[in-house]
Amino acid sequence: MPSGVSLARISLAQSGVRYVDLGKPEALAWGPPGVFAVKGGYVIPDNVRSVIVKYDTNYAVIGEINLEGVASGIVSVVQADDDLLALDINSGKTRIIRVSSDGTSSVSELSLSPDRLTGIVKDDTGIIIEEAGGEHLYRITENGSILSTTPVSSYTWNGVEYSVDGYTAAYTHERTVHLGNATAIITAVNHLGLVQIVGSDGLGGVYVVAEDVQVNPKVSVNEYLWHLDANGTVLSIASIPVAEQLTAVIHAVALGEENNPIVLVTHTDSIEFRKPGLIDHASYIQSKRGLLPGEKDDSVIVARQDLIVYNGTCLTSAQMQSNALEYLNTWTNISSTSINNDSSCTPRIIPAYLGGGGCYGSVSYDWGGWETPTQFVSAMQSNYKAGNMDTTYPNGIACAHGVDCSGFVTRVWGLTSKLSTWTIPGASKPLCPVLTLGDVLDYPGVHVVVFVSNATNGINTYEATAYLYYDRVVYIYRPWSTLTGYIPYRSKTSCN
Image: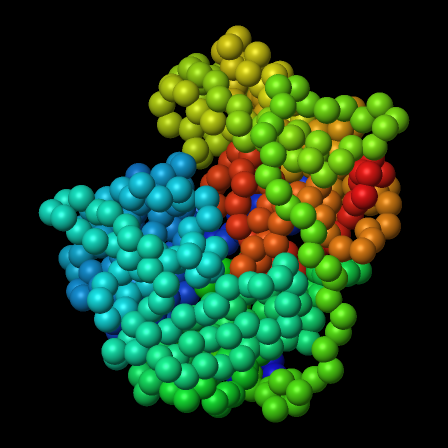
């Protein structure tokens, strides 16, 4: 069955997993980042409650690891001997959380920027950190209590090196996977998005996740798990049910007992462990390819000192990027008065990236807000509240300052009346021929992101987001699977 076979479905109340902002207007719902195979079963990080939930090989909950006050932005977990290592990218830092078999934890920091990191993996020679779904790999080395990283180009399992080549064009139908001296071609009917090695099958072969992405008229993503043998021959292709996911699950596949794959699916009332369904891989590989759009110039520019406002003359992609970079390049001192809650600003929820008073980059997420960077800095200098994550009030709360996802897009497009994710289509014109810098991907009533460029395994975006407790304007990598159902739009103010 293409949809796969259900192995277990656990009610949300019993699963230990929680979602954030589910069903709230103008708010992006999110939940567990993925499922990971460990000794004796599986684990799922729950960043909402700051725990790692443990499951046995029959998918029953057998306990949880409490990491409250230690970690709240875990994106990936790996077994390392008797310990678990978790990659935590919250609070603008990259941290490795080591959890011993008795449940005690310790924290080490890495100098890598956290905003594009997606995974932590163990191979024959140690631990590897993945950036942008494997676009770049960094091996961790330990010198006493100090961790450092070295770029590497491949994984090694059972003495065999595995890697994926990079892009030769912004859009492509195929990429090459290297298995020692053998190679295999991964293909897609549409644009080939993410191509990521999941792990070895223990017999010299490998499992690879690949995305088939259609961008227009709406982003549509089909995700497949390719199984290649040691010679690069395709043994099978299985379907990963991206369209069924309630929330974006970055690491939906884990290799469990005897390296058999299982998939995590999130539902409104439950989570499900599923065996992925096989498709007719010979027919898929031989399918007629569609036309791909041409490559666009995504050169990066330096930000201006002021936002560029639309005055009847169109804005170029470079000018829209300049507006976005004004937010990212903003630095201001945020006092403890502006961070902490008090009776002057209820029921505000503090953005998670804010700790004690100090100098912070970017502009805080403020639901309903659409302040310019200058306005935000001025508010912080006057000790007003920085940001608000409470989405229960229709237009936000006046005592908090910052910008939300659609407010950010409003400013990037040079507009002076705030858009919402519902009204963005009315401020747009037909998108032709393809996404270019300054265009957006919008899910009305949920979230909107600014397209920056294609990445090796997805896209790069600017966005004001509460996702994974970023809680501010960020420049991040997005797998296509996190954008399924989003619709591309181009501003009427755009010169393109």
